[in-house]
Image (cartoon, rainbow, N blue to C red; front, side):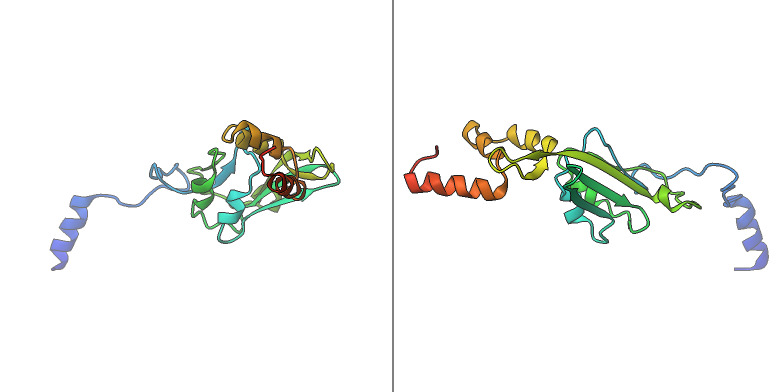
Length: 168
């Protein structure tokens, strides 16, 4: 292609540069940007942490305070949207926000704290109230009784039921 043809083609196309960062840039509708956890919807099940390849989401129990903490660190996030895909209640959404540079590292952290339920038999904290309510809506009435027990007491109770050959 000759120089004149190249010049005429460039003039016919027009400007292709963006005025970013002086003007906002449009991102596609399905752009995977900064993930955000909705504190009102999160049930603390930990599915997001299990699915997160770079372990940007950590879930741990603070027994002394009686809370489960769901902690998101954007510095590790690869914006793969696996957390959004596996969340059973849709509490995690990827936004279109992509400008995450900050002088304060604390801006890259989000933590959700959920109150832990205690076992009806031994008193040990074992799961969040929200998660138990979510599960209770999906199980039969006799199984709801088991939701009030920690895994160890639940195993003990079900083994008693098997021993006596009944559910209760």
